[in-house]
Image 1 (cartoon, rainbow, N blue to C red):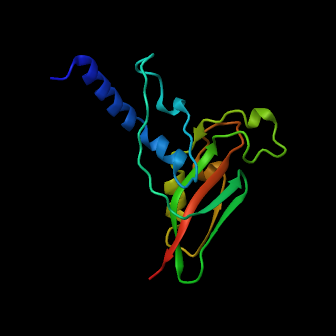
Image 2: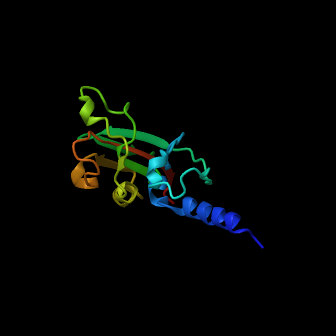
Image 3: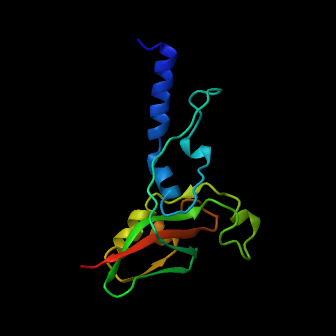
Amino acid sequence: MLSSLLRSALVLAAVLLSYKCRERHHFCNGRKVCEVDKRIFGGDPCYGTYKYTQTTYTCLTANHVVACELSTAELICEQEEVIKVIGAFYGRNDRTTCIYGRPNKQIEKVTCLSTTATSTVAKSCDGKRRCTVYAVNSKFGDPCYGTFKYLELAYTCECSH
């Protein structure tokens, strides 16, 4: 029989692996490298206890596009191919993307994202040969008022047959 401490550790591990999966999903989809800030998991349920996140992933060859807020992202496939969106991110999670001419107060918040970015872009672009996506709050919502955001997305081109 498992000791209560081991049982608690297993339950905690299960909770951490499933907690806010949607946010982890949006941070990493379509990226070549992904680092996730521990704050996306919420508060620490067991302070002082070592925790880790285990995940699985699949690497896909993807086209990567970044569009600063108020600009556009162009997704284009060759003849006989159509767009398949892998993932999209709208918000800010670093202090280096789309910073030219921006005051520090507009780039200091780095933990905001639209939870609907992937589905929004996929709904607009999947199955098309060309697609233009506007990186604007009216399309994705405003996950962090006063912060200058950007749209980062990854897509593949699949045979249209």
